Image (cartoon, rainbow, N blue to C red):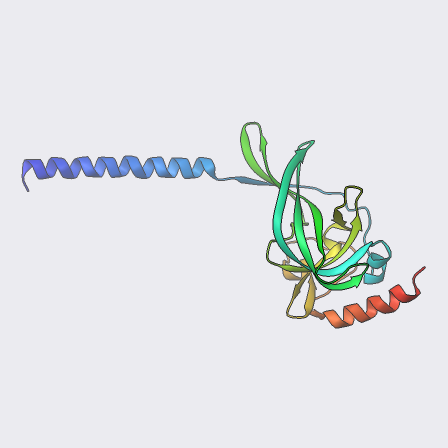
Amino acid sequence: MTKRARSMLITCVILASLFTGTCIFLYMNHQMETQYIEGSIPRGYSSLNELAADSDVIAVVKVNKKLNHWVSDHLPAFNLEATILTPIFQSKHGETIIITQIGGVMELERKKINRQLKDDPPMEVGKEYLIFARHNDINTYTIIGGPQGKFLHSNGSVSSLHAIDRSLKKYGQIDLHSFDINQVKSQLSSYLSVAP
């Protein structure tokens, strides 16, 4: 190997090392910390009927997209647009509703963090959920009971979030795992037809 080739090889190795080190440094500094905060779940529900009694809307929805995002008192929140696929109570097929959720990215002490409610993961775009929701004054909806008021819907079945992700704490007594949505609709229809 000539002196010139050896010199070029050493230079290339040094530049590659510097480039790799810089990339690792930038990657490590841009990793976002996820911070879980304790939420206040005021009530543990013992049945779907109890959830229904506190709901303004019950439906299977598909989350279309994330809309706006804001931070108030160090608590991030965002709105989701969802389309009603299966109306159960006070909803119409194809209707679009806005659902407010807690969590998201915010800046704290000049550092971006992802702040989420512990045991209450936000609904994900593209997924379907059976929701029990309350109407807000600002023409949006809030899921009642935190994780108790939303169930993952897939292939005609619904499951409690804690039944799918065992790391989530169970609130209340509702425990559905691959439960047929038609049975849920039937049970809720019977209850809602006689509810005060």
